[in-house]
Amino acid sequence: MPGGLQRPSATLLHRQADEPPRHHPHHQDTGPVRPLPGRATGLPGVRPTVHTGPAAPGLHRGHEGCRERRGRGRSPTPARPVQRHLQAHDRPGLDERLWRPQGPQRPAPLVTGASTPIEAVRFHESRTEPPKHYTVDTLLNAMLHAGRHAEGEDAELLRKAEGIGTPATRDTVIQTLFDREYIATQRQGKQQLIVSTPRGRAFIDNTPSMLSEVRVTARWERELDAIQNAANDTEARQRRDAFINAQRAFITQRIEEVIEDVEDAPEAITDTRNGPTENMLTAARKIAASRNLTLPEGIETSFDVCRTFLDEAMQHPAPPTDKMKALALRLADEHGVTLNGELTTFQACKAFIDKHMGSKAPTPKMIAAAEAAAKRYRVKLPDDCRTLVAACRQFLNEHPQ
Image (cartoon, rainbow, N blue to C red; front, side, top):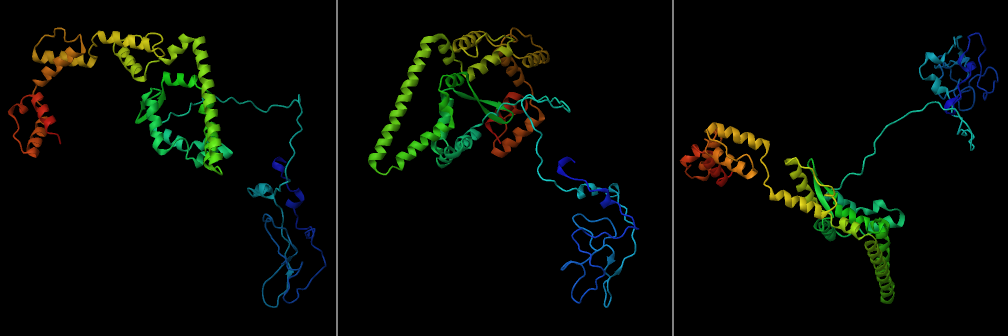
């Protein structure tokens, strides 16, 4: 049976009334027994019980031929014959309740090269997701709980040291990464996510991977604790000097390796190190989108390529947007004027819109707001605030709510 359970035999589930009562195998049949005062019949300490219906789980049938009648001066009398015919499907769940566990089962013997039938093959398509970007708050929290990424003694040391850095230095470390343009912020919905810049990724690529491992920080914390907990000043100085010498040797070796890398591939290292900042790339993408331009190849990795693109774009005035053009055409039609080059540059179109929008009458809502502001500030509302939108807007800016 599956799951190590054994189905009860048909003998236990099918009884006929004409069969003699069957006692439990562990019960001893001693014939008719009269109950002694203060004692029940059957086994000592066990009251004989008859279940005329299906047996309850975990119970056995006692003296099935007798039913105890409670009352004064009455002794157990034989029970009437009862039809006992149980079917598993008559009682939902009876099958499962009557099974009994058979203990742990041995797995099938498996050897190299053995064949086994396959029941089914199922395909499931899924897509992996990269780790979520940090925000400033989550990055500070990750630095505080750096011990989560370590195990054993390393994790305990990092918890004792309260993570990487101190509350006073963590903010400084993150700000230094921003100042050196290793990281930048990118808005996604209401969050400001921290993203790496090409310069930051280049720095990681040219830095020993061991420096980014939490266990290295834990090892340094262990050595610093040994210096702090030294038995005397002499031992503390010896441990301090050993730690400093080890760090000096490591840094010297790494500098020599970097110099060799630069000599082997100076162009590749220079291009990667001098990548553009995130702000430069953002400006270049906006200019290309507004002017329907194609970004040059290598603009995301080369500082010089990105700077050249921005310089050339700044030499040519930016054109107005489609919404600005539509508004300028509508204002020209309303005022009966002719456009003469105002649609060629952003600045010219903006100046035309400001001029003719200011000559329009303010809306009733603007006039009401200006009157409320004049009353609130206890000043007189100028007359042109009721006729010129520019004057009304200027008054509202000078008298904010």
